[in-house]
Amino acid sequence: MNLLCDLSFDALGELLRGYSQPSFRTKQIFSHIAAGRELGAMTGVPKDLVKRLEDDGWRALGLTVEKSFTSALDGTVKYLYALGDGNIVEGVLMKYKYGNTLCVSTQVGCAMGCAFCASTLGGLVRDLTAGEILSQVLVVNALNAEKDRRGVTNVVLMGSGEPLDNYDNVTAFLDLLADERGINVSRRNVSLSTCGLCDRIRKLADDGYAPVLTISLHTPFDELRKKIMPIANKYSVAEVVGAAKYYFEKTGRRVIFEYSMIEGENDTRECALALAGLLKGFPSHVNLIRLNYVKERGLKGSCDTAIDKFSKILDNNGVSNTVRRSMGSDIEGACGQLRRKYINNKN
Image 1 (tube, rainbow, N blue to C red):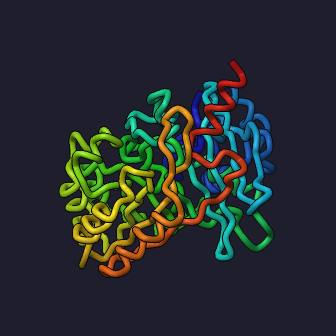
Image 2: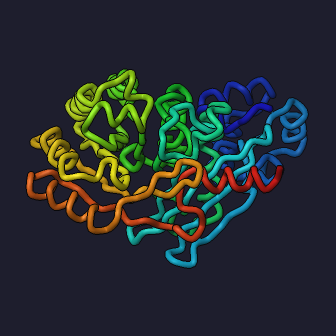
Image 3: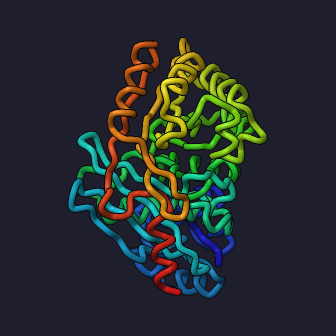
């Protein structure tokens, strides 16, 4: 299967020239793709061209919405997407006053093996292509767009998978997403979450990409980080923070550190003080997150009291932080849980 959504504007034009199409056809089809339309739904495109493309194995988008689940608590919507090869990935649309933020997946499964995450339970199945990542945005945007407003205004790469482990496809996605002739979501409205692949963080900055970088840190201590995040066996906490500082210096973008609060593990006064010492003076921000419970992992989220105490220690030491609000808790809140439940129920 070949995906038109994998192609840049220029690459699409080159393809269509091979079908003896006039130059305006490129803009026409590129706009249809940005609107989340499959080939058969593209008005104004000759039916014989559609048939030739389909006969040659082309389709416009990389997935369809298999199911969606809407939270009765806050309107958050979780989507299950069916890929062309039968694999399933998920995404979450979170609705705020300033716009709609879509959380997208970059891989089917994940190879990182973090102890608190459901996405990695089955290991890495495969990378998503740039077009498959983009298709998540396009189909959800089409479902939620209003007359004078896009249905997706912000994108976070925080679904299943490690974005920087799929570097080439993710950066190609960022280019496609920002194309003014397409859906035109600025890179400044994109956040990318990584567990801390230091060489790729530096490469991202060196290659001229500057999304909001969020790094899953979760502890200031190397030995504890090795226990909950296998990537820590390759990169120390000091190296991760060093890469974050390099990214800030190169891009000017403030780095956000994700800190999942795990009861009895990383929610102690000692951890808070060490984290404050590590980040004091560095223009960054810490998101404190109550851990989503994953049955297979057995780790519990910290209580409100422990989280509040941790936050106050950071406040008192001049470290910017927020206790992140949980959204969509009634529709399988943990990343990867909905996909896993769906697959298990089908088997």
